[in-house]
Length: 149
Image (cartoon, rainbow, N blue to C red; front, side):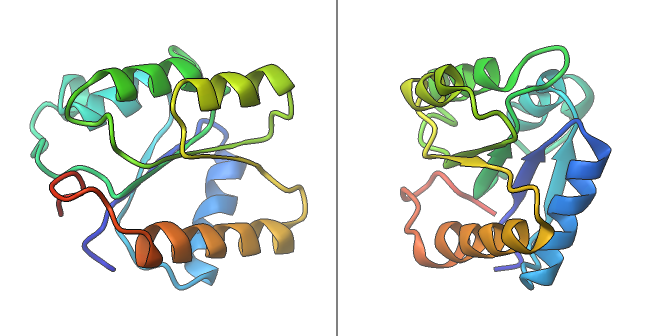
């Protein structure tokens, strides 16, 4: 599992630390790349801007995407991921504190694979992250040729 990259797109330092702690507690040892706004996430995914030197063939196995992001919000990031041939099949889990029905509908309309509200309680959050890791990194079969490491 170590060769499968997880892209965590999270602008809140506390939520980032919580997510990283939950991944560690779940014994998920994948490389975790953290981006803190929508522009940086897209730059990473498409090997442009600040990430222009990155190997564009190394596509993450999974994107954990917050929707309340600076510069470009997560729903626009989702739209651009699905609009690009290189990433249109990339598994994206929206992981957010938003419980707005419109955000849920828009997330799925734009093609997210799952929409999960961040539980406030760490124990519940850690369990949700453990299940995410088990499903998306162990059990789920990726589309051949899309999740390279």
